[in-house]
Image (cartoon, rainbow, N blue to C red; front, side):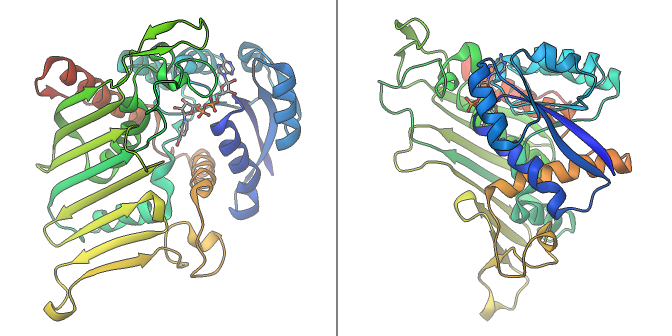
Length: 379
Ligand SMILES: NC(=O)c1ccc[n+]([C@@H]2O[C@H](COP(=O)([O-])OP(=O)(O)OC[C@H]3O[C@@H](n4cnc5c(N)ncnc54)[C@H](O)[C@@H]3O)[C@@H](O)[C@H]2O)c1
């Protein structure tokens, strides 16, 4: 069996989610590569060592440049905040490493374009961790759409709601709250939450032609964790946009961190000529499906429990009827990435797909600034 030596950068939320996926993938998916957790990298040596011990990494680095120089690392996994994605990815591509990068791909689309050019020039396998594509019910929705079950699509409706920044006492910057610091995050909910909704939408419903958006920053000043001073907030707290897809369908997208009672409510609904699909992250193993072609008296919404052996990925897990969860989407992503290397057919979303999402988020932010419809570039 060949080995795939992973060098992980970041030991936070995603560092843990990815490490769990790397550890489990060979137990459930038949692959020609065995994943080896070779090195964990973080700036704090003691914390990085503790993370390495917990997850079984063989070694520790405190400088990502040193990690990239190592000849025994095959794939660099970027699970650090958005402001370091580009610098690390450009160096990793130059060193000929495969790269897995967290979303959003970059702080903005010009930076993302440089990353795309670098990985394509170096011809290194690359992927962005838009993991929601690989929740079996979402993958199953993609199959249904591709089979034509919905027919012509008229509407796409997505939202991602949270409520954790409503208090004006939440600081900006620093561990845990870097998402509120525009210098580290690039944008607010547009790049953080809407990016997920957009990636899923581009995958399920094709390209977006144009958008018109509005954003709001409800808390204008917050204490900065690094200086202790009240500082202007540069991120968008809420972001809403209308979109026209290239296939002629119309869409609404909404994301906020000010929807009291919601922690991570990601939902989408698609309305087509023959039927509709609805999915909800809080009930992630179910796909709601309405088929107008059913006989009139039996017509109604069906709740499909996506746990059968015939459903995407599910044959690799337990027995029909037993559901899996959030963390499995990352295991699926690693499995598909490795299968892509082995088959020579790269798994999506690649960096170029990640750029497509960044083109939409940039257009959303530009429209919110100008109040006009903005055309979206093609990646
Ligand atoms: N796919 C998803 O669903 C999902 C979910 C959450 C976060 N993310 C993305 O993952 C990335 C990380 O987010 P998180 O929630 O894990 O953040 P986090 O704050 O939990 O962890 C970030 C980690 O990066 C480390 N770090 C910061 N700067 C670094 C540097 N210069 N060198 C090395 N390490 C550095 C921090 O010490 C920490 O260990 C972000 O890009 C975020 O948008 C994606």
